Length: 280
Image 1 (cartoon, helix red, strand yellow):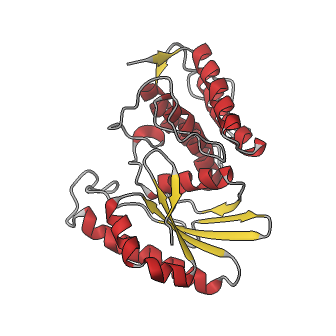
Image 2 (tube, rainbow, N blue to C red):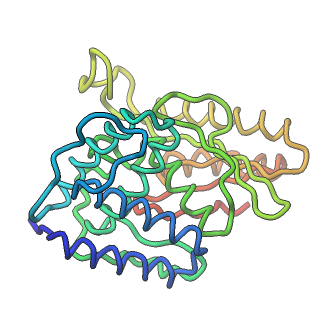
Image 3 (tube, one colour):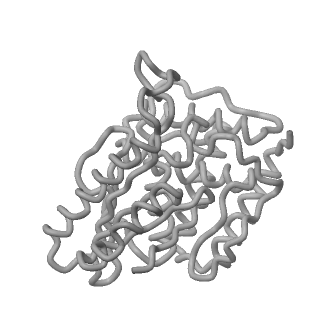
C-alpha cells in the first residue's frame, strides 16, 4: 500500500491544482477545491483549526500516510468541524472538497470542466472496491455523494451554487439551487438504495426489500418532487439527478418524452464523479 510523506502530499496538491486550472475551471472553483484540501492537510499537521474550535485539538499526524489513513482522518476532521459549531452545510463542503483530493490521490476522481480530459489522473491505480466517501463510510451512489458530484460539475460549468441541502441532516426542499447570469436551476437529487441498513439498531443488517425494487420508489419520489418544482418555477430550469445505473436509465427511458414536455432535465452521475445529461 503506497504512502505519502508530508512533502509528497504538498507536491501532489500542487499537481491537483494545475490539473483543475488546465481543465478550465474558474479561478474561484480552483481556489475552493485546493483551499479546502490544504486546510485538511494543515489540520493533520496540527497548524489549522476553525476559529470557533474550543479545547485541545487532535494530535498532529506525522510521518507517511496512506489513503486509508487519510480517509480515517477525514472522519475525525468532520467531527472536529462539527464540534467547532460549523453549520452542517459548511461541514459538508469542508469535508467533501478535501475528500476529492484524497480520491484523486487514490485514482478515484477525475477533474471535470470545459477542458477536462475525461481521463482519471492519479498517483497510483484505482482500487474500485474501496468506499469513496469521507471517512470511508458511504457508497458512491449515496445521495450525498451524488449531490457533491453535481455541485462540482455545476461549478465547472460556471454556475454559482445558491444553496444545497444537508443530506446528512435530512433537509427538505430543493437539493441544489444554482445561478449562472440570469439563469436559475433547481435540482432534485436521488441516490440508490443500499442492500443493508446504514444506521440505527439494524445497521449492517440486510433490508427486506431488494434495492432494485426500492429504486423505483426513489425514482418516483424524485420525479414527483421535480414536477412540483417545475410547477412552482416560472422561468427557471429544473433537473433530476441520479446515479448512472441501468435501473435508473431504463426508468428514464420510459418517461423521456414526458420529461421533454415538462421541461425537466435528467442528469446522470457516474462513479468517477462525471456528469452527463440525458438527451431529450
